[in-house]
Image (cartoon, rainbow over all chains, first blue to last red; front, side, top):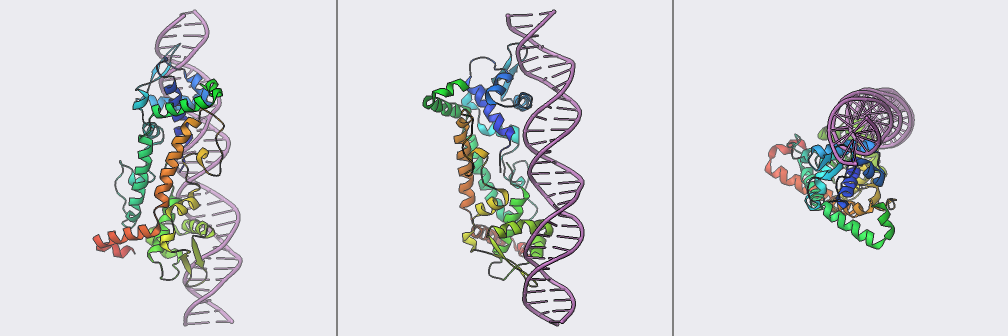
Length: 149
Length: 149
DNA sequence: TCCAATTCCGAGTAAGTTCCTAGGAATTGA
DNA sequence: TCAATTCCTAGGAACTTACTCGGAATTGGA
C-alpha cells in the first residue's frame, strides 16, 4: 500500500514548480537538484505529466517547465493518477474495470469501495496551492528553509 | 496504490473462516477451494496470520483453522498490516520510521499523513463481523449464493 | 497400531515492476 | 554559431509478486 517514487517525486516536482509559479519556465536540472532526484528519471516522469496536460514545456535555452493551470486547479489526485494509475486499492473497484466474477468476493467489495473513496477524497481535496501554503508555514518557522527554494 | 493478492486473499480467507465461526476447525483445502486460491500459496499467508495471533490451528486429521478472536474483534486493518506491512502510503509516515531528511519534502508530509489516517480509519473500523453481515445481505438477495458457502 | 488427513517448513522460480542509466536528436535564446 | 535545454528510445540490475515443489511432523479414527 505504498505510493512509489513515481508519485512521490511527481508531487515534489510539481510542488517545486508551483512554489515558483509566475517566475517563468523552470529547467528540469534545477528541479532535480533542489529535490535531489535523478534528472534522467525525473525527465520521464515530467514527460508523462506533460502528456497528461498538467505541465507545459518551453524548449531550447532558457526553457523549462511551467504549470499548465493555476496551483489551486491542480489536484494531487490528478498527479497521482497520471503517474501511478487509477486510485483504487483493488482492480474490482477501478472505474474502468467491471465487477468481479466471484459472488462471495463481493462481500468485501463494499470495503474496497469505501477505502477507495476515502483515498480519493483526501487526494482530490488537496491542491498544489494547499501544499504551497503548507510550505510557507514551514518557511515562517524555519529560516533555513529559504535555502532550499 | 494497490493491495496485493496477499491482502486480498488474506481478507477473503479470514472472512471464509469467520462465516463458519463456531463450526470447528476448517481445513485449508476447503478454504482454498471455496475461495479459488492456490492451496500452497494460501498456506503461507495463513501461516503468517497464525504467527500474528489472528488464527489458531489444529494439527492432524480433522484439523484446520479457527479464528483466534470473535469476528467483531478482528479488524481488517489487522489482517492487512500482518500481510502487507504498515498501512502508510509513504515511508516517512510509517509509525516505525522517523521524519524525512529533506525539509522541503515535509510540505507534502501532512498530505501523506492525512491519506494514511483516512485509510486506517476505514480499515480499522471494519471488522470481520461487518463483512459477515454484508455477506448475509448478499445471501438474502441471491439464493445461489448458498452454494458458495 | 497404522493410515489418511492435515498442518508446518524451507527452498526455488518465472514473470513482472521499479528505478534508474546511457546516448543522442531536436529546438531555441543570446 | 553555441550552449542550454527538452524530447525520445533502449536497456538493465535489483527487487517483488505469486506462486510451485517436496517432504517432515502431528493426530483422530479404523
